[in-house]
Length: 278
Length: 318
Image 1 (tube, one colour):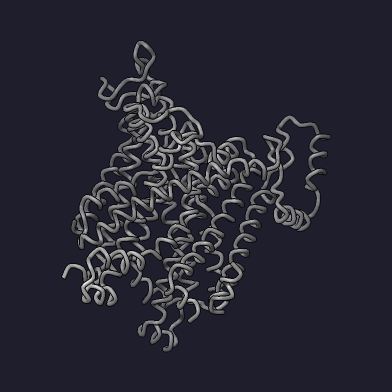
Image 2: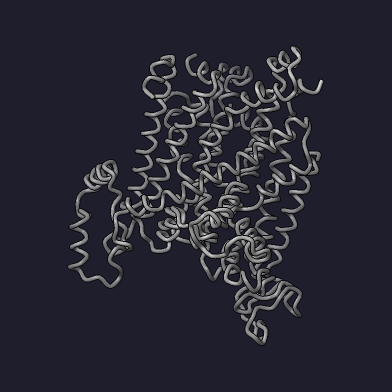
């Protein structure tokens, strides 16, 4: 598959999901319990029921509205946390790459520390302190993921700082800050886009995962992860309650993964050929 | 081990020592972070242990027992000394030492992790080798990898549960700790790592296939599979070892979900419980154990890589 098709597919999927999330108020309230929201046996309505295209949940609330609002919450924290973590990581990585010596050592050791704590484990520990909600998720994800960006950006900054055009600028007395803004940032644009795509995928997984565990977005507010958790109750008799949020989580992560993979492949592969098939 | 070390070039031993030291510093930093998170946050620790309806006497008693009235530096020192001597504190809820709670759960998680690692390396390795030998990208493998990358562990877990336990009923739906109960969690955890392994193996194999020693091997007329086995696979192994070392961090995150979905009684489940009970000592204890495992797993991977790969030995002594 050509890279540009991968990127286009990913962006189109993301746009479709964003539209659906933005249109959430059109589908009614996610918390309203409909009087005919359950069958006469007290079971949730199935997919394609009258008035409820995606059926209802175990309490008789409309799944379409819940999913749309859930997706909205997920996308909200994903965008904010993605920008915050990639931004922090880029700043640290560039600073470490250009202010050498003690600063670099200190910052990169700190990065090592953050890279050596497993994300979900420390996410749970952090969640017990920062509390639940969108702000909590953003803080947790930023704390856990900035270091990945920092390491990648640092590697690229080290490569670039030895390039003649950067050295020339520095020798001419241009301030490091200006060099970074004018000569380095434009050169790591592709890398940053790639990181944001992959980081975005990770943010969705960790954020909705923590909500699934009860450590992220708390109950009255729908979120794809906690919808999935609710759906597990009905696993044996109404699996669609589990599958609907699952499809949306996967679609959202997939849109990020496709963009990331597409950008990955625009980087020209080496011209090396296998000696086996000559 | 010591004999091995003395046989190595000094640059090697030195680099190892530096890494060991850095690993210890990392653990120390994690300890500091967990201390700050536990003690320096707003909120009364004694009250969070005893609950909202505790009497002042009880609160005073707890403060006295845990030295909560001592200066922060004193508490920090006490905490460090405690952790370094193996004392991770006592669980608020289960009223048992955190160390023994974790030690009781560790074997189950290790078993799960090792089985998942085997699944991951076997499947990811085979797919990577296949794609590298094929010479160009396979659409099927791309779809598989992208699909696996896009499916969070808990989602994949429930899909397995729905298909294999409910629809086909070939695997147990109940929770337990025997071989039959190990299959699904291990396969799900392993599958989530397959995309990374297959692409690392593919890239490393592709690079090796293009190198000059493979050209020589082909030129002197060795059979195709001998070249692959003796000259390509061995060369391509080294990044896999590094990757497996880094996997410990990934697995320790993954087991929280996998153990939650399948009810496998390991550390992940313990963490989940600790979080739901607001049991901070237990939660921080698991963070510390996890960080130690990750740091020393990475070190072990380095040692193994140096042992199996002569190039890594040269790299380090240069």
